Length: 252
Image (cartoon, rainbow, N blue to C red; front, side, top):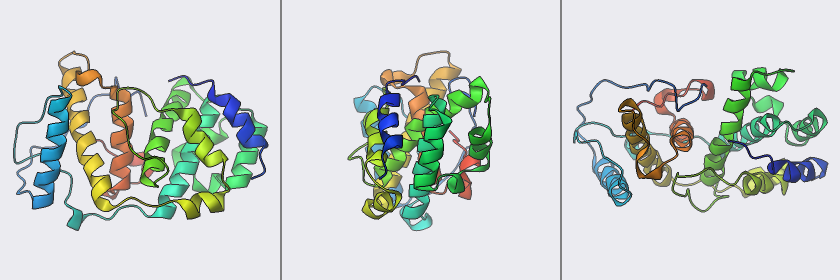
């Protein structure tokens, strides 16, 4: 995922006052469930499977398994948690592009980002010579930033995950605002909207993992890495297993 052209926007941003590769990692799987689904779980599954069928993506056949939690059982992350996460992810992506430290330091100062890092992010942010894998992982977090911006209402919709997001546009959203403005203008999406996307990406990731196990290409021209990052991000948003950012599971 190489988006060097973002550096042009980044320099403007910074001069303004105002895991391992998912494509090669073995899938984490859960024991077979036997769920008595609620009405909203059933409706959500039906909607997601119709989406899959329209795009020639296989669906999981067991009718009593593979559901995200119902609305009554989940609590979405708060607006402030998601804002903090978006800012940390933006920094991660920009560092992965090779942005000069003086610009990163200004970004940190303007948005108080270092206080928002997870443990692994802090390790990468402090690394003078990060490994290639650390840099690649951080670069893919642009896709997670994209999900956070959607959850905060800055992006209208999550497009079909067949290609990578437009990083320049996403960074401009943050660069055009102060931290206070970015936080105050955010409009958190409803639990239903976020759960709908969590359910859908759960099924898309299952299809990608299933194809990989069978040594086939991802179905429906999906980009499996984009799907993985969305799954990771949405699981964090719905507090899947109440896991912290560094420890989010993407069970399929």
